[in-house]
Image 1 (cartoon, rainbow, N blue to C red):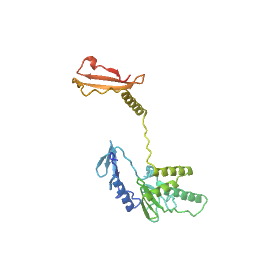
Image 2: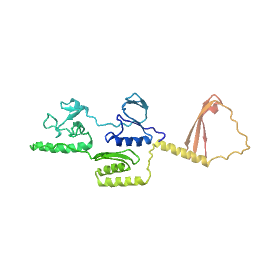
Image 3: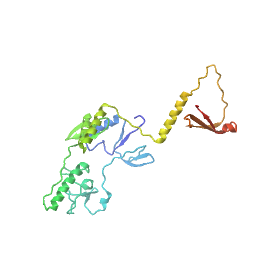
Image 4: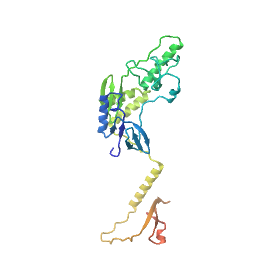
Length: 299
């Protein structure tokens, strides 16, 4: 963690504004205590050559950029002769396009007004229920039924996990935070899985995760594995053929200074022993000393 720097940029006053200010402030304090730098009231305007540029003019060097943003309307909608609101198709309470009989719109392409004020968010929870209402209204139109079903939906709440078995949420107007919110988030996620087999497998994996440490895996390339085997073989050969240490009374060997550079290449010969090939070049020494030389490290 000390070698990494995390910066969270948000245009809002606190993170997770979809919940509420109190819950967002709790999540912000938790992330700040873990060393995450949080910059508020600012957005990202551009990124190029490993530098992230913010809307306030500041530039942050970064190797990795993770971008999270809301669902934007398809640019194709702008060219359609349909009533629109904020780039989305305007529909009535029955999800029918205003002024276009027999045409409906749902999901993040539709601007659906909320009777309590504002508009419904373009999320999957709303889109699934909008699709069921539209299917019923289309069938009613085909069979000549005059009564259409208006779209009404009240969300039970929202949950978010912020790492380290900690979460935040708001369910039926009640705020949750800490381990309880994290557990509720995982329970709700588990209940939405489509098959019983997947639910059992994931529940067992999560249960073991509570009792044991993380299991990390390292993926290496063939070149990296070959290099590791070569280093291991060289280390084994040096241990087997290590020369005896000189006595303390032995006179030190004096090496004449020479201005040359050398490159040593180590590989294995047909017998499996390590062979060192040294290539030297420089101004000192005879031509034979500057030539390439090969020696067997261990017979």
